[in-house]
Amino acid sequence: MYELLIVLDKELQTSLNRQIYEQIRKAIFQGVLHHGDVIPSTRLLAEQLQVSRSVVIQAYEQLQSEGYLIMKKGAGTYIAENAANENNSRQEATQKVNNYDIFTNASHIVSVVNSPPIVSDEQQNSAVFDFRYGVPSWEAFPMDRWQKVLAEACRKATPDILGGYGPAEGSYRLRKEIARLLRSTRAIPAVPDQIIITAGATQALDMISRLFLKNGDRVIVEDPAHPVLRETFCFAGGNVVSVPVDEEGLRVQDIEPIINEQNGNHGDVKLIYVTPSHQFPAGMTMSQQRRIELLDYANKNNTYIIEDDYDSEYRYVGQKVSALAGLDSSGRVIYVGSFSKSLFPGLRIGYAVMPASLIKSFLAIKCITNRMTPTLEQEALAEFIASGQYARHVNGMGKLYGARRSCLVQSLHRHFQDRVTAYGDEAGLHLLIQLKTEVTEELIADKALQCGVKVYPASEYFVISKPKTASFLLGYANMTEFQIERGVELLAQAEEQCTRNIEQEAVPKVI
Image (tube, rainbow, N blue to C red):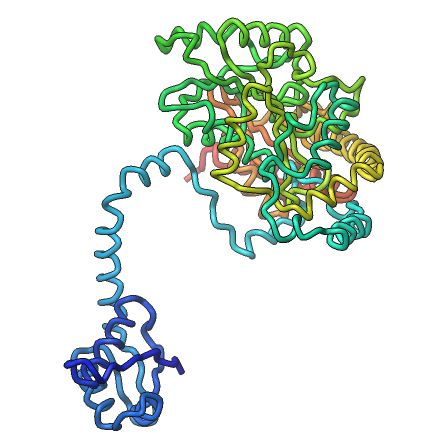
């Protein structure tokens, strides 16, 4: 039974039964009461409000006569179906009025941002073998060690850490450890004052967009790239210009011709976004010559480069490559990193290494949009790095992921033979594969899911020239070798079944 929250004012000229009537009716209109909700009997409500039962009876009878209530002996009193329908129509009308003023902005949001689909528990759990990319191994994470440093951070927490908001730029100790890490592993001569802690790399990219872009400003983005990345820049008012990559990375030589086709000035390019260590999703590493060309373009055109170093911790072939920011002597590169791939995404700690000239402005945006990043997690992470546990974890994961990557490559060639080409297998946590098949990505992905395998079609990441045959992103970090082998086997069976279905449909039927 629903307990009614009714407040009577005996000083009002409005009768008590009218006050009860109006408050119940209002609760129905506001959606507080719904069709089928059982409300207190006249006797119980009279006792609750300390009024005569006849007062409540008058109110209920009025509501019943207008179609809001149904009163049945033995079944109680409950909200009528017609009342709920009327409530919905009124809510829709009210929503249209309330949305009028924000319609323009709302339509802008919808035009640039594709809302993620709502996934049911059944859909979420339907895939036994999920080749989800960008996800580290959860079962291999040293949770016991992380819990210890987190508990230690709680024990040592001072009133300033727990009771205050802390500096917007983040924990000095963490920024110092990140600076040391970047100098030793990425050849970036960063100092703590340049490093701003953010809620993951996504927030860093959002704030950089806010800092630089106004309506119509051009942003050069690699093609292919993640659709959400393009949406981030568009949401800030940017005009995203896709420029293709080749085996050496972003084709810097194509920037001017593409802009000229749009009748634009090169000075309109405010930002260039690249993933030089391991291009997402194609996987190549930007060559040294191409890096020099990119820095030269940025200097000549007063443009800033965003270097997203999203999974540079893991390289399996050849020597590790240094960051683009390590070559930058003019303060043109904004380096963005996070711990989502090396530790776990739920940590939500990332950072931006800002050129000195941009620190003050970037911090101002940080203060407005996100005053601080959780302090206890920052202190725990600082200790995790300083104690050497982070480096040991990354080294161990590199060996584990290397074995899983080899398993995936071998399984693909075993089951697809010469009908598969894999890209980006030298580094990272995923592969981009292209199949020689007449079957579409959608058909293969749907059939694979029916077999318990989830794969991720790659076409949506391309703007200029989409793959000519079915292509997929396959993550392997969070799968065992058995799961990888079995998942590829089922994927191959799904593709073969789709091919047979197409061939059977193409055979003329004899009548």
